[in-house]
Length: 382
Image (cartoon, rainbow, N blue to C red; front, top):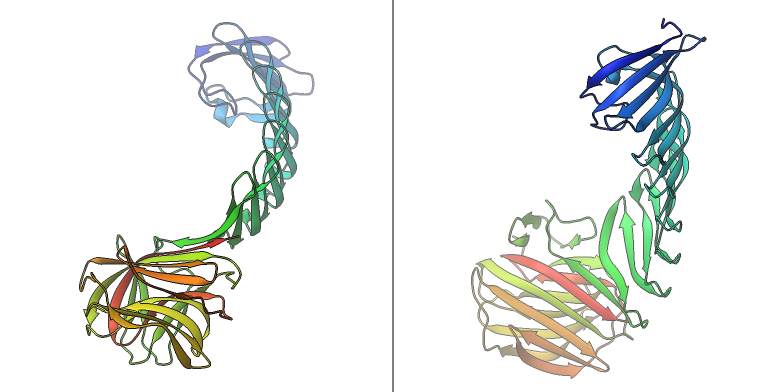
């Protein structure tokens, strides 16, 4: 137990309690209750930290046991942080300040973990973020603010991960972007707007994860189709079956809004006369729209309703379709009551738009073939 007199510890390069690396000078004073009052000073003489400990290690401050109220200071004398400890564990309100003296953050700590509401502030005093914790894990709503006070984003956390809708705003209050999260992962369909309110929905996937994400659904009558992702290539689709393979994601498309769809396809193996390409408006295998190309140099597009095909245009030759290991760029543009089809920059055909009933969009492989889809982009003008 320390006696009730002041002990000056020589200057040393120590890590002062809970503040990182600082050289400081320590003064220890014994208290009547057996605790030690400790004051750490910058080597230039300014107070760095003051608090009480139930145990002070003579050589290693990391082994000290804090017990009571603590305050840390900037060199200019303003408070940097204030918190309390019980037998070595932080408990109570933790407050931090900017060097200017303005409050930086407040959070409740229980058993050493953030537990309850936390508010962060800009140096101006305006709120920067509001969040809530439960036993150290983020939960509930998180709101970020612009320096002027308007909300910049709102998202809900579940077990520390975003879940559901995240809404981002322009400073004028208009919605800038809406993203949906599932188990902490952002769904690639995002609603974006400009500051005037003109909006569009964008679904974009470059297949950068180790495997196709859960939102891609494989549909084939026969067993055997394989989907994998190949680093630097994209989505590898192998269809050893004779029936058509559809790979679609649920995208909130409709017949009212204009849209564009783009993808890049590389043929790997299979017959030159097996067609592969884009599907949209997919409801089931008997109701969908398609745009396909063949390594033979031909392409075609149509609308299937109740298993009856209606061509947007008959099978025709394109100026350029690459056979193997080169990218072919497909694009569809729907504008008003017309829909146009492009292959490698060439406009192939424009036809009247055909309404559809499904929300699936993605790819089709029309038989025994291996292809790689580098990316997929579906943009909807709202």
